Length: 318
Ligand SMILES: [Mn+2]
Image 1 (cartoon, protein in one colour):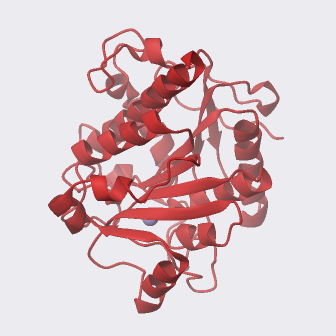
Image 2: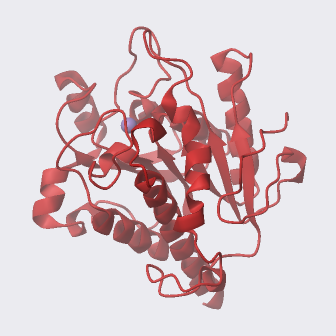
Image 3: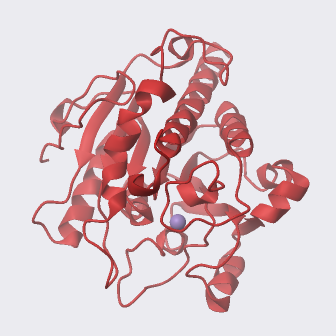
């Protein structure tokens, strides 16, 4: 496999390794910068810059490295996390066609997931979830999908493009390895029309509007997520409220708060294996000057990997 591109700086102070032949990790983070654009979209889009932007602000989201107390985790991250953390650089599209690029991203993801690493992907737009789903299918990993987003993302195609950012959950629904999905934070309008909403419901997707979460909390959401199957979690930054993550292309009022999403991640990760997490659709151009969207993304990653570390330790102690 081709090497990835070296990031400006590592996430946290994790070791960087861009040669896939040397990837051995318990937790592996990779930036996936591109996906297939729609007609009229800029190429590259602003989201291609997000992996390095999130890493840059890990000076704050991971302040103190693995040794300072993390009050979200009620521990030092180093006491929870497994030993081998790896920043695998960025999968950047070069001259290749999108099909070849997606195949390369699928192969990176399959290599990491197949070795048993927990995979953390920073997009890119929401199309980057598609090759990761392909990797899960290659590995025949049974997963349940937890999706945080303002939008349904169930389009079969947009202008003939099937692998774009409006389609990842539709794509997931076609995978044998996907046992089901819960979609959280829906609100406003987006790419979905009546047909897509009906298709998602017919498939059995558990849909929760942001408004329902604000009214009833996360417990009804968690109740729909089976605890006997590993999870893959995909977070579109616009699922959170734009006051929390302003750096997005399609901000929608009424979104989820950090204090709803971070506890959700911790609860799920302490309860069952989470094979991977992606955080997509961060647009650094629209972020606040202090990079709060990128800092929030880094905090969500640390909440997930820390809680997964606690679950791993508890499972081993049993
Ligand atoms: Mn999305």
